[in-house]
Image (cartoon, rainbow, N blue to C red; front, side, top):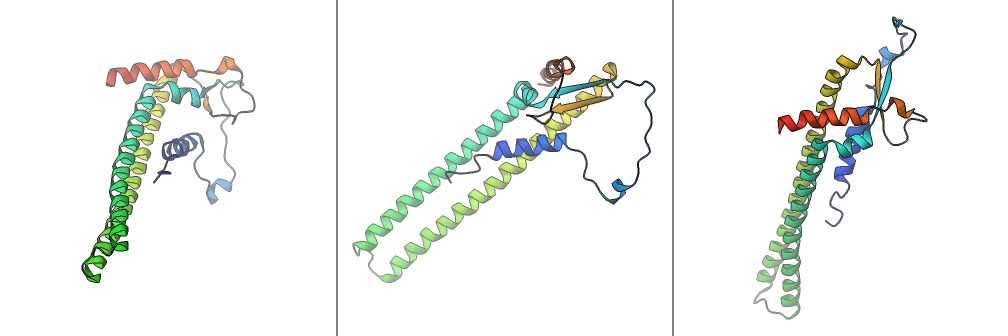
Amino acid sequence: MKNFKKNSIIAVAFVSLFTFTQCAPQNEEAAQPVQTVQPATSTLKVAYVNLDTLMSRYNLAQDINKEMMRKEEDIKMKLTEKYKVLQADQADFELKYKNNVYATPERAQSEYNRIVQMEQEIVQLEQSLTLEFEKEGLEKNKALRDSINKYMVEFNKDKGYDFIITKLGENLLYANPAYDITKEVTNGLNARYATKK
């Protein structure tokens, strides 16, 4: 419980970020030679977006992160309350059992069974809430990724880049800051998001 998917948000974010930055899975057809088309000019227009910076400054990403953190806190509170009740019942049962308070062994067994059932229900609830939380996180990250991808198509209509790549952590050995369009992209995404709020 204490370790309730503490890294769920981070894991979901990194899964979606890696999905965002990775190529499609390769299959047997990919091994065949690919015909290439030579560009009309000998130079490529390339830019990059620092994904760490974008995700920390894009208002939609911030809102999703806050919402998911609130939900995680709510789940933790709900489970903590249930575990406290369970622990109190367990302690009460142990004390009563130790002091022979139960009139019959059947009554003691009945109380023990009730507590075991309660614990199983809490464990099932925790699993259910965790799966629901992870599923929602994946859906939110897909919506975030789709939002960025759609914007990048619009953005590039005027800019005409041949490639816009993502810089995530240290995945690029070197990137000239002159090609960093992160601020421009972030501002555009935030302006579009503000109109949709």
